[in-house]
Length: 292
Length: 237
Image: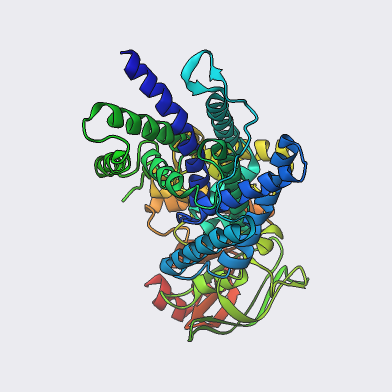
């Protein structure tokens, strides 16, 4: 029983990483209806910016805030320069754009900061959390930040005018324009927010996986999986999906013989496919009710 | 009296296809005008051209200022509300959120709240369902919601695209009654595009008839209703 509890706890800790990334994925999906394959690389780049600032002597929280602003502005810039012109293009053109962006950001980061692994500090410390050997204070902090982000997003979308306008622009652009919403800027804003959330994810993940240009590759796949499992349109779903994927991955690795660390990923993904076959809207995606 | 909306030599295009061929008409402030025409005559295109939702040339002036080159959302912000064909309901959101969206450009919070209550007075069924997902409303209820959403803008001009479409005759009568009331009491200028010519002519004070992208007849609603050709083609007797 203790093994089980420990594995669940450890799963929740890794799940927080996925949850954080899934939040960014859901943000962008809400705004543009696509999955952004470059999301992880954008987060990685932001994390490098934070690292660089700290190398220059900026204290952690200062660097953290500057990185958030930089990422927000960067996300908007990417949308304005690259994806606004592609807004009416076919999906595949957009996908090609995402892949190009992925490759470009990855290479540029490698060029500037090279591919050697770097240490990234944590603001929460890394001693055992409440005496547990499985959760460190950093991981507990990460879970806390993820839940806080979730609450902020929920509040933003549910109770603010801007949030309502963003939801409207995402669900029905033409009607949104007819009530006076500048849908084009709402999309840009969605990119900015997704980039900033991604940056938070990156800065929290880096102390665990170490900082290097390819650090987000696996994380992004799990992040996608978590977002899809949670239903792509729901921030709450993304977070719950993230924790579920983390826990499931751990339990399967522990209890099913022969799986071990190497086969965790395909089995977790197999579970997700199964869930989607049974419940295509995901766990928390609101099925759209329509009169026929 | 100068017109509130003045349309001159309006031509609209869908790709290579020209849908409007030099349309001209004017709406006086406070009037309730109807634009009649058969399927494909260009009624919807006319409304879409006013809101810059289709490529067009010519001059459209609102309060003497040209609308040319303004984006749809900027035109709406001038106080022109457009109830599109198919109603444009935000189906995944609640009825109340739909109403809030109608007022999204307004910053007077108290005014918005009291206007939502006013809409519930106009359309009591919306109050009953205010927490319901708008996609679950019936066609008639969705049309009421669309009109209410447009009114939340506090528009000076309201464009309605076939509000009677797909509704039961009794519901259409109710809806048109409310439109008349809005026109008289709230001083909203209304342009309504209709295939249901009889009802539209009863309601309106002025009418235009459009055929293949041109205005072929105009006059007071009574004149048009008594016109031999209109009676044969649009009223069916």
